[in-house]
Image 1 (spheres, rainbow, N blue to C red):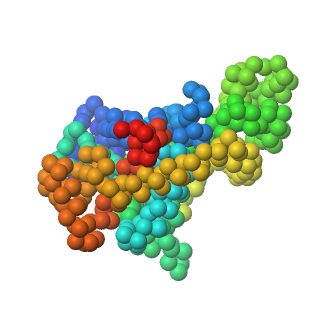
Image 2 (cartoon, rainbow, N blue to C red; image 1 turned 90 degrees about the horizontal axis):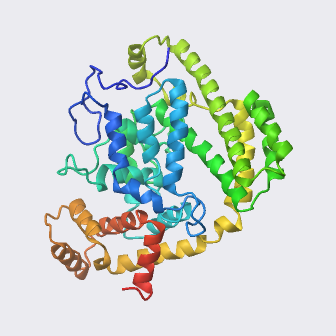
Image 3 (tube, helix red, strand yellow; image 1 turned 45 degrees about the horizontal axis):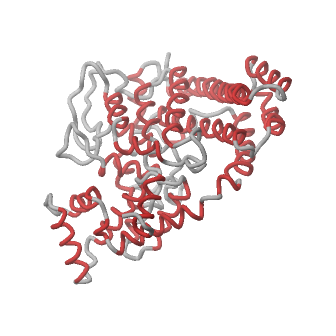
Length: 450
């Protein structure tokens, strides 16, 4: 059978849909299922739109063909759908997770994420129980608390399903604290406690679709690291072909034919043709491998638990331990071993290159100075952040001046109540900036712009 991991896989299902969404239950719609609604809400969200101006690896000023977080998310979406289609999984859920997986990223790539985490860790005004910043978990805060949906404006967040939120949170690793037996402590605790309440609310809503997106994210990174490396001269064709030749045992007939042509015609192929052929080879190899290996794992999973119908799966699902299912969607051991070494090569030659690292110091400085300026004078925050602070602290007003008056009065009395909320709002604001917006705000606050 085509294995499906979710009981709400079709819009006509007859199962109870209570407690499916983050905030409140919604009526089902005949023309679309809950996950397609998630996808649409993410697609039209402000957080998703901002991805077009956020760095993936190389700063966006280099040229018009550089990848952004938006183009990366679209690539992950396409790869994940290809895998999910071959495995009979829910395409709408995959698409919702893939499109939303990177919305929590900061400007300037991972360096921005690291700097915000450091600023929060060093800020004595933020209690230990409310520290932390991580892009995959910040996405939960955006979609559950900060974004406002048009359908239910009286509620915070977009009211996404918990399956979509789980997949977004777990596309990147999360370090859960464990007990003496090695199992995660209950309730769940992480190194980023500000997000622990979100994680505990969605912990039972895992899906194979979520694992598919996580693996598609890795494949997409290999693909565009290679293309960017070739485009900017950080690696040449000969050494790249030498690296990929190590994967020959994993090639199918199509990959072997493509590799033979690349090796034979490497000196005469135009750059777009060579890059396109090489990308096709790499993507086909990874996707074919993960599909075949996962099909085999699914068969073993079904046999072990005697799963013959979707109802069988629902009956055994509550009894499963994470170790029973987390490795089902995976590369074959042979390709995984080769991929680990290949990833090290790409990191050394591309991600740690001068071209990729040249702007890191500047990015850290800009984010640090933005935080300092807004912390010392929160009057410089925009209305969205001011009213977000008001909502989170229970100040019932639509007047900016009244919120600022509360902040000013509290600070004059040296009362720290709500100060940690204000500083978190500052982090939310900076974390949501595009690269160019961060540059402009820095220039406005410290330069000559008005």
